[in-house]
Image (cartoon, rainbow, N blue to C red):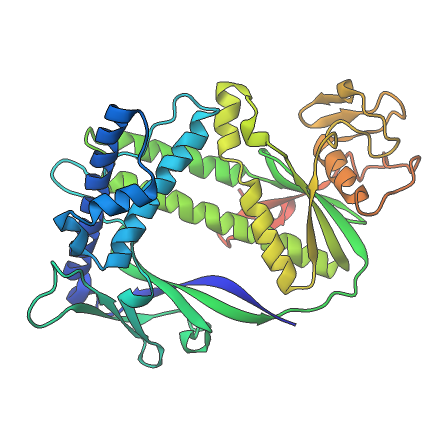
Length: 416
Protein backbone atom coordinates (compact mmCIF):
# COMPACT_ATOMS: atom_id res chain seq x y z
CA UNK A 1 0.00 0.00 0.00
CA UNK A 2 1.30 3.47 -0.87
CA UNK A 3 0.88 6.52 1.35
CA UNK A 4 1.79 10.18 0.92
CA UNK A 5 3.97 11.76 3.59
CA UNK A 6 5.71 15.12 3.99
CA UNK A 7 9.49 15.21 4.06
CA UNK A 8 11.99 18.06 4.34
CA UNK A 9 15.31 17.74 2.50
CA UNK A 10 18.27 20.06 2.94
CA UNK A 11 20.42 21.29 0.10
CA UNK A 12 23.71 23.18 0.27
CA UNK A 13 23.93 26.21 -2.04
CA UNK A 14 26.80 25.74 -4.46
CA UNK A 15 26.91 29.35 -5.75
CA UNK A 16 26.88 30.85 -2.25
CA UNK A 17 29.08 33.86 -3.12
CA UNK A 18 26.82 34.88 -6.00
CA UNK A 19 23.52 34.71 -4.10
CA UNK A 20 24.50 35.49 -0.50
CA UNK A 21 23.98 39.25 -0.76
CA UNK A 22 20.55 38.85 -2.37
CA UNK A 23 19.47 36.29 0.25
CA UNK A 24 20.74 38.63 2.99
CA UNK A 25 18.47 41.36 1.64
CA UNK A 26 15.46 39.03 1.68
CA UNK A 27 16.27 37.97 5.23
CA UNK A 28 16.58 41.60 6.28
CA UNK A 29 13.21 42.33 4.64
CA UNK A 30 11.55 39.43 6.48
CA UNK A 31 12.86 40.83 9.79
CA UNK A 32 11.56 44.29 8.88
CA UNK A 33 8.07 42.98 8.11
CA UNK A 34 8.12 41.08 11.41
CA UNK A 35 9.22 44.17 13.36
CA UNK A 36 6.61 46.48 11.79
CA UNK A 37 3.86 43.92 12.42
CA UNK A 38 5.13 43.37 15.99
CA UNK A 39 5.12 47.14 16.61
CA UNK A 40 1.58 47.39 15.18
CA UNK A 41 0.37 44.54 17.40
CA UNK A 42 1.91 46.33 20.40
CA UNK A 43 0.03 49.58 19.64
CA UNK A 44 -3.31 47.77 19.19
CA UNK A 45 -2.65 45.80 22.37
CA UNK A 46 -2.09 49.00 24.36
CA UNK A 47 -5.29 50.57 23.03
CA UNK A 48 -7.67 47.59 23.09
CA UNK A 49 -6.06 45.05 25.41
CA UNK A 50 -6.14 42.47 22.60
CA UNK A 51 -3.64 41.16 20.07
CA UNK A 52 -4.87 41.56 16.46
CA UNK A 53 -5.51 38.27 14.70
CA UNK A 54 -3.62 37.04 11.66
CA UNK A 55 -6.17 38.39 9.15
CA UNK A 56 -6.18 41.87 10.66
CA UNK A 57 -2.38 42.08 10.68
CA UNK A 58 -2.14 40.91 7.07
CA UNK A 59 -4.73 43.45 5.92
CA UNK A 60 -2.83 46.28 7.62
CA UNK A 61 0.64 45.15 6.52
CA UNK A 62 -0.41 45.02 2.86
CA UNK A 63 -0.62 48.81 2.98
CA UNK A 64 2.98 49.14 4.22
CA UNK A 65 5.82 49.63 1.75
CA UNK A 66 7.95 46.89 3.33
CA UNK A 67 5.29 44.30 2.41
CA UNK A 68 6.49 44.36 -1.21
CA UNK A 69 10.09 43.66 -0.24
CA UNK A 70 9.19 39.95 -0.46
CA UNK A 71 7.00 37.84 -2.67
CA UNK A 72 3.41 38.25 -1.39
CA UNK A 73 3.17 34.68 -0.08
CA UNK A 74 6.54 35.02 1.67
CA UNK A 75 5.34 38.20 3.40
CA UNK A 76 2.16 36.40 4.48
CA UNK A 77 4.25 33.59 5.95
CA UNK A 78 6.10 36.07 8.18
CA UNK A 79 2.78 37.26 9.65
CA UNK A 80 1.64 33.67 10.13
CA UNK A 81 4.83 32.94 12.08
CA UNK A 82 4.28 36.02 14.26
CA UNK A 83 0.68 34.98 14.98
CA UNK A 84 1.85 31.46 15.87
CA UNK A 85 4.46 32.97 18.22
CA UNK A 86 1.79 35.02 19.98
CA UNK A 87 -0.45 31.95 20.29
CA UNK A 88 2.41 29.93 21.76
CA UNK A 89 3.00 32.73 24.26
CA UNK A 90 -0.69 32.75 25.24
CA UNK A 91 -0.55 28.99 25.81
CA UNK A 92 2.57 29.24 27.95
CA UNK A 93 1.08 32.02 30.08
CA UNK A 94 -1.50 29.55 31.38
CA UNK A 95 1.17 27.72 33.34
CA UNK A 96 4.22 30.03 33.29
CA UNK A 97 3.75 33.64 34.39
CA UNK A 98 7.37 34.44 33.44
CA UNK A 99 6.76 33.74 29.73
CA UNK A 100 7.56 36.69 27.47
CA UNK A 101 5.75 37.67 24.26
CA UNK A 102 7.61 37.41 20.93
CA UNK A 103 10.21 40.15 20.64
CA UNK A 104 11.64 42.21 17.80
CA UNK A 105 14.11 40.83 15.30
CA UNK A 106 16.78 43.37 15.92
CA UNK A 107 20.15 43.67 17.62
CA UNK A 108 21.41 47.23 17.76
CA UNK A 109 21.33 48.56 14.21
CA UNK A 110 21.35 45.12 12.59
CA UNK A 111 18.74 42.41 12.12
CA UNK A 112 19.26 38.64 12.30
CA UNK A 113 18.79 36.51 9.19
CA UNK A 114 15.48 34.68 9.62
CA UNK A 115 14.14 31.88 7.47
CA UNK A 116 12.40 33.07 4.29
CA UNK A 117 9.68 30.75 2.96
CA UNK A 118 8.72 30.61 -0.71
CA UNK A 119 5.36 29.03 -1.51
CA UNK A 120 4.11 27.78 -4.88
CA UNK A 121 4.20 31.06 -6.82
CA UNK A 122 7.45 32.20 -5.19
CA UNK A 123 9.81 29.62 -6.68
CA UNK A 124 10.46 27.66 -9.84
CA UNK A 125 12.22 24.35 -9.37
CA UNK A 126 14.47 22.67 -11.92
CA UNK A 127 15.35 19.33 -10.26
CA UNK A 128 17.07 17.93 -13.35
CA UNK A 129 19.77 20.60 -13.08
CA UNK A 130 19.63 21.07 -9.28
CA UNK A 131 18.55 24.69 -9.55
CA UNK A 132 15.74 26.74 -8.05
CA UNK A 133 14.64 30.30 -8.81
CA UNK A 134 13.49 32.27 -5.75
CA UNK A 135 11.30 35.29 -6.39
CA UNK A 136 12.26 38.74 -5.13
CA UNK A 137 9.69 41.20 -3.88
CA UNK A 138 8.78 44.00 -6.29
CA UNK A 139 10.71 46.55 -4.21
CA UNK A 140 13.93 44.54 -4.58
CA UNK A 141 13.66 43.71 -8.26
CA UNK A 142 16.04 45.52 -10.58
CA UNK A 143 16.18 46.00 -14.31
CA UNK A 144 18.01 42.73 -15.03
CA UNK A 145 16.68 40.22 -12.52
CA UNK A 146 13.50 39.59 -10.57
CA UNK A 147 14.69 36.32 -9.03
CA UNK A 148 17.65 34.63 -7.31
CA UNK A 149 19.01 31.57 -9.07
CA UNK A 150 20.40 29.08 -6.55
CA UNK A 151 22.38 26.01 -7.52
CA UNK A 152 22.10 23.36 -4.82
CA UNK A 153 23.27 19.89 -3.88
CA UNK A 154 21.43 17.39 -1.66
CA UNK A 155 22.62 14.16 -0.07
CA UNK A 156 23.54 11.41 -2.57
CA UNK A 157 20.49 9.35 -1.54
CA UNK A 158 18.03 12.21 -2.23
CA UNK A 159 16.71 12.81 -5.74
CA UNK A 160 14.20 15.65 -5.80
CA UNK A 161 13.17 14.81 -9.35
CA UNK A 162 11.45 11.71 -7.94
CA UNK A 163 9.26 13.45 -5.34
CA UNK A 164 5.57 13.99 -6.09
CA UNK A 165 5.53 17.68 -5.25
CA UNK A 166 7.75 20.36 -3.73
CA UNK A 167 5.30 22.29 -1.55
CA UNK A 168 7.61 25.11 -0.55
CA UNK A 169 11.26 26.11 -0.39
CA UNK A 170 12.90 27.75 2.60
CA UNK A 171 16.08 29.79 2.60
CA UNK A 172 17.64 29.10 6.00
CA UNK A 173 20.67 30.77 7.58
CA UNK A 174 22.52 28.03 9.48
CA UNK A 175 24.84 30.39 11.34
CA UNK A 176 27.59 30.32 8.71
CA UNK A 177 25.86 30.41 5.33
CA UNK A 178 22.52 30.08 3.59
CA UNK A 179 21.06 26.67 2.76
CA UNK A 180 17.81 25.49 1.18
CA UNK A 181 15.13 23.29 2.72
CA UNK A 182 12.69 21.62 0.32
CA UNK A 183 9.35 20.59 1.88
CA UNK A 184 8.05 17.78 -0.32
CA UNK A 185 5.19 15.35 -0.73
CA UNK A 186 6.64 11.85 -1.07
CA UNK A 187 4.87 8.59 -1.89
CA UNK A 188 6.06 5.59 0.13
CA UNK A 189 5.22 1.93 -0.03
CA UNK A 190 4.15 0.54 3.34
CA UNK A 191 4.22 -2.99 4.65
CA UNK A 192 1.06 -4.59 6.01
CA UNK A 193 2.15 -6.16 9.27
CA UNK A 194 1.17 -9.71 10.10
CA UNK A 195 2.74 -9.45 13.56
CA UNK A 196 0.46 -9.84 16.55
CA UNK A 197 2.85 -8.65 19.27
CA UNK A 198 1.85 -5.63 21.37
CA UNK A 199 4.05 -3.02 23.09
CA UNK A 200 3.21 -0.18 25.45
CA UNK A 201 4.98 3.18 25.70
CA UNK A 202 5.00 5.47 28.71
CA UNK A 203 6.15 8.99 27.78
CA UNK A 204 7.87 11.08 30.41
CA UNK A 205 10.16 14.01 31.12
CA UNK A 206 13.21 12.25 32.63
CA UNK A 207 12.84 8.97 30.76
CA UNK A 208 11.56 10.37 27.47
CA UNK A 209 10.09 6.98 26.57
CA UNK A 210 9.79 3.68 28.41
CA UNK A 211 8.76 0.75 26.23
CA UNK A 212 7.16 -2.48 27.45
CA UNK A 213 7.91 -5.02 24.74
CA UNK A 214 6.43 -8.52 25.11
CA UNK A 215 9.79 -9.85 26.31
CA UNK A 216 11.70 -6.85 27.68
CA UNK A 217 11.39 -3.34 29.15
CA UNK A 218 13.60 -0.57 27.74
CA UNK A 219 14.25 2.93 29.10
CA UNK A 220 15.21 5.82 26.80
CA UNK A 221 16.49 8.64 29.06
CA UNK A 222 16.65 12.26 27.93
CA UNK A 223 20.00 13.16 29.49
CA UNK A 224 21.49 14.47 26.25
CA UNK A 225 18.42 16.67 25.67
CA UNK A 226 18.78 18.15 29.14
CA UNK A 227 22.47 18.88 28.56
CA UNK A 228 21.78 20.52 25.20
CA UNK A 229 19.03 22.69 26.65
CA UNK A 230 21.29 23.84 29.47
CA UNK A 231 24.22 24.64 27.17
CA UNK A 232 22.36 26.37 24.34
CA UNK A 233 19.92 28.20 26.61
CA UNK A 234 22.87 29.60 28.54
CA UNK A 235 24.50 30.66 25.26
CA UNK A 236 21.25 32.35 24.25
CA UNK A 237 20.92 34.30 27.52
CA UNK A 238 24.58 35.30 27.63
CA UNK A 239 24.38 36.91 24.19
CA UNK A 240 20.89 38.42 24.41
CA UNK A 241 21.01 42.11 23.53
CA UNK A 242 18.90 44.93 24.92
CA UNK A 243 17.17 45.34 21.55
CA UNK A 244 16.47 41.68 20.90
CA UNK A 245 18.32 38.47 20.11
CA UNK A 246 21.85 38.64 18.74
CA UNK A 247 23.25 36.52 15.91
CA UNK A 248 24.81 34.18 18.49
CA UNK A 249 21.52 33.97 20.37
CA UNK A 250 19.65 33.07 17.19
CA UNK A 251 22.34 30.49 16.37
CA UNK A 252 21.88 28.88 19.79
CA UNK A 253 18.11 28.66 19.29
CA UNK A 254 18.51 27.11 15.84
CA UNK A 255 21.16 24.67 16.99
CA UNK A 256 19.06 23.51 19.93
CA UNK A 257 16.02 23.03 17.69
CA UNK A 258 18.10 21.00 15.21
CA UNK A 259 19.48 18.75 17.95
CA UNK A 260 16.07 18.19 19.51
CA UNK A 261 14.57 17.30 16.14
CA UNK A 262 17.35 14.80 15.46
CA UNK A 263 16.99 13.28 18.94
CA UNK A 264 13.23 12.71 18.53
CA UNK A 265 13.65 11.27 15.04
CA UNK A 266 16.40 8.92 16.27
CA UNK A 267 14.31 7.91 19.31
CA UNK A 268 11.10 7.15 17.41
CA UNK A 269 12.96 5.48 14.54
CA UNK A 270 14.74 3.20 17.02
CA UNK A 271 11.51 2.25 18.80
CA UNK A 272 9.71 1.38 15.56
CA UNK A 273 12.71 -0.64 14.35
CA UNK A 274 12.73 -2.55 17.65
CA UNK A 275 9.00 -3.24 17.21
CA UNK A 276 9.56 -4.66 13.72
CA UNK A 277 12.45 -6.83 14.90
CA UNK A 278 10.41 -8.14 17.87
CA UNK A 279 7.31 -8.91 15.74
CA UNK A 280 5.28 -6.15 17.39
CA UNK A 281 2.41 -4.99 15.19
CA UNK A 282 0.59 -2.68 17.63
CA UNK A 283 1.90 0.00 20.00
CA UNK A 284 -0.15 1.77 22.66
CA UNK A 285 1.26 5.22 23.50
CA UNK A 286 0.34 7.07 26.70
CA UNK A 287 -1.53 10.29 26.05
CA UNK A 288 -1.77 12.79 28.95
CA UNK A 289 -5.21 14.35 28.52
CA UNK A 290 -5.31 18.10 29.33
CA UNK A 291 -1.83 17.96 30.90
CA UNK A 292 -0.99 21.42 29.52
CA UNK A 293 -3.84 22.85 31.58
CA UNK A 294 -2.47 21.50 34.87
CA UNK A 295 -0.44 23.57 37.31
CA UNK A 296 2.73 21.79 38.42
CA UNK A 297 4.39 24.77 40.05
CA UNK A 298 6.94 27.17 38.54
CA UNK A 299 9.70 24.58 38.00
CA UNK A 300 7.32 21.83 36.97
CA UNK A 301 5.53 24.02 34.45
CA UNK A 302 8.81 24.92 32.72
CA UNK A 303 9.71 21.23 32.41
CA UNK A 304 6.19 20.45 31.21
CA UNK A 305 6.41 23.04 28.46
CA UNK A 306 9.44 21.25 26.98
CA UNK A 307 7.68 17.87 27.10
CA UNK A 308 7.19 17.00 23.43
CA UNK A 309 4.74 14.10 23.89
CA UNK A 310 2.59 15.23 20.97
CA UNK A 311 5.62 15.51 18.70
CA UNK A 312 6.87 12.05 19.70
CA UNK A 313 3.46 10.55 19.01
CA UNK A 314 3.32 12.13 15.54
CA UNK A 315 6.78 10.79 14.68
CA UNK A 316 5.88 7.32 15.96
CA UNK A 317 2.62 7.34 14.02
CA UNK A 318 4.05 8.11 10.59
CA UNK A 319 7.18 5.99 11.05
CA UNK A 320 4.99 3.12 12.22
CA UNK A 321 2.64 3.54 9.26
CA UNK A 322 5.57 3.24 6.87
CA UNK A 323 6.69 -0.05 8.45
CA UNK A 324 3.37 -1.68 9.19
CA UNK A 325 3.21 -0.93 12.93
CA UNK A 326 -0.10 0.47 14.18
CA UNK A 327 0.42 3.25 16.74
CA UNK A 328 -2.55 3.95 19.03
CA UNK A 329 -3.10 6.89 21.35
CA UNK A 330 -4.40 5.73 24.75
CA UNK A 331 -5.37 7.77 27.81
CA UNK A 332 -2.75 7.29 30.51
CA UNK A 333 -5.20 7.97 33.37
CA UNK A 334 -4.21 5.98 36.51
CA UNK A 335 -1.49 3.99 34.69
CA UNK A 336 1.25 5.44 36.87
CA UNK A 337 -0.32 4.36 40.16
CA UNK A 338 -2.01 1.09 39.14
CA UNK A 339 -0.12 -2.16 39.69
CA UNK A 340 0.42 -3.97 36.39
CA UNK A 341 0.41 -7.33 38.20
CA UNK A 342 -2.65 -7.24 40.46
CA UNK A 343 -4.50 -4.05 39.54
CA UNK A 344 -4.19 -2.32 42.93
CA UNK A 345 -4.44 1.46 42.39
CA UNK A 346 -3.37 2.76 45.79
CA UNK A 347 -1.75 6.15 45.25
CA UNK A 348 1.02 5.49 47.78
CA UNK A 349 2.27 2.56 45.68
CA UNK A 350 4.22 5.13 43.70
CA UNK A 351 6.88 5.46 46.40
CA UNK A 352 9.00 7.96 44.51
CA UNK A 353 9.59 9.06 40.94
CA UNK A 354 11.43 5.92 39.84
CA UNK A 355 10.14 3.29 42.27
CA UNK A 356 6.85 1.39 42.38
CA UNK A 357 6.02 -0.91 45.32
CA UNK A 358 2.58 -2.54 45.38
CA UNK A 359 1.05 -2.73 48.85
CA UNK A 360 -1.13 -5.70 47.80
CA UNK A 361 1.00 -8.14 45.81
CA UNK A 362 4.39 -6.67 46.80
CA UNK A 363 5.52 -6.13 43.22
CA UNK A 364 8.70 -4.04 43.22
CA UNK A 365 9.71 -2.42 39.96
CA UNK A 366 10.62 0.65 37.99
CA UNK A 367 7.66 3.05 38.03
CA UNK A 368 7.97 3.94 34.35
CA UNK A 369 8.10 0.27 33.36
CA UNK A 370 4.98 -0.36 35.41
CA UNK A 371 3.25 2.48 33.55
CA UNK A 372 4.41 1.18 30.16
CA UNK A 373 3.15 -2.32 31.00
CA UNK A 374 -0.24 -0.86 31.90
CA UNK A 375 -0.30 0.83 28.50
CA UNK A 376 0.49 -2.52 26.84
CA UNK A 377 -2.32 -4.19 28.79
CA UNK A 378 -4.83 -1.69 27.40
CA UNK A 379 -4.46 -3.60 24.12
CA UNK A 380 -3.66 -7.10 25.35
CA UNK A 381 -4.78 -7.57 28.98
CA UNK A 382 -2.61 -9.95 30.99
CA UNK A 383 -4.16 -12.10 33.72
CA UNK A 384 -3.59 -10.57 37.12
CA UNK A 385 -1.35 -12.72 39.22
CA UNK A 386 1.41 -13.13 36.66
CA UNK A 387 4.76 -12.75 38.40
CA UNK A 388 6.51 -9.61 37.10
CA UNK A 389 8.97 -9.16 39.97
CA UNK A 390 11.63 -11.41 38.44
CA UNK A 391 13.80 -8.49 37.35
CA UNK A 392 12.26 -7.44 34.04
CA UNK A 393 10.21 -4.66 35.67
CA UNK A 394 12.74 -3.89 38.38
CA UNK A 395 15.83 -3.97 36.14
CA UNK A 396 14.98 -2.79 32.63
CA UNK A 397 17.49 -2.26 29.83
CA UNK A 398 18.65 1.31 29.26
CA UNK A 399 19.39 2.68 25.81
CA UNK A 400 21.32 5.96 25.73
CA UNK A 401 21.72 8.49 22.94
CA UNK A 402 25.26 8.42 21.54
CA UNK A 403 26.23 11.92 20.37
CA UNK A 404 29.06 10.67 18.20
CA UNK A 405 26.90 8.37 16.05
CA UNK A 406 23.60 10.19 16.59
CA UNK A 407 21.88 6.90 17.44
CA UNK A 408 20.70 4.93 20.49
CA UNK A 409 22.69 2.08 21.98
CA UNK A 410 22.63 0.03 25.18
CA UNK A 411 24.32 1.69 28.15
CA UNK A 412 27.33 -0.61 27.80
CA UNK A 413 27.92 0.49 24.20
CA UNK A 414 27.88 4.22 24.87
CA UNK A 415 31.14 5.69 26.15
CA UNK A 416 30.51 8.93 28.05
